[in-house]
Image (cartoon, rainbow, N blue to C red; front, side, top):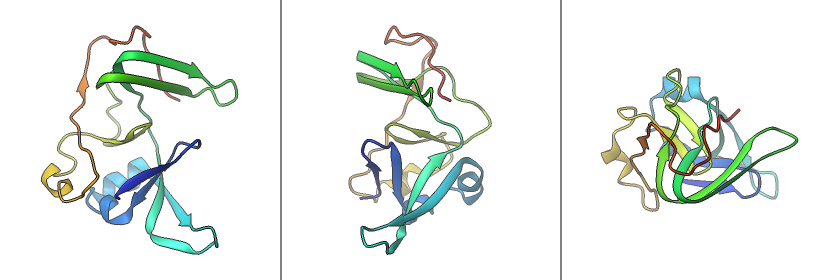
Length: 141
């Protein structure tokens, strides 16, 4: 498995080989990588925790709900149907963190290289001019 999450904490765990397929300068500028340890405290060198400098909310077209955390002010969003982005992502990043994984600008990685990873979904997300979920603009902090 190339990527997974620590449930309840919204922390992405990514295999370092997957991260190695991305441009090193983009990883360095857009992501913060951390160490993963097993329950015995031993470092798992093939894995990294991943946090994005920029975070996106990947929106959906059906059954959308969201809440904002009273403590950290972060949006928690859930929706089904067609996934999309709204508003247009910031132009100062190539790789973004989201609740569904990493969102990578087109041309940042060769999708044919990613096809070799079983259990890795690669979707094209459209940027829509208006949200389809009726929730207006939700800016992630």
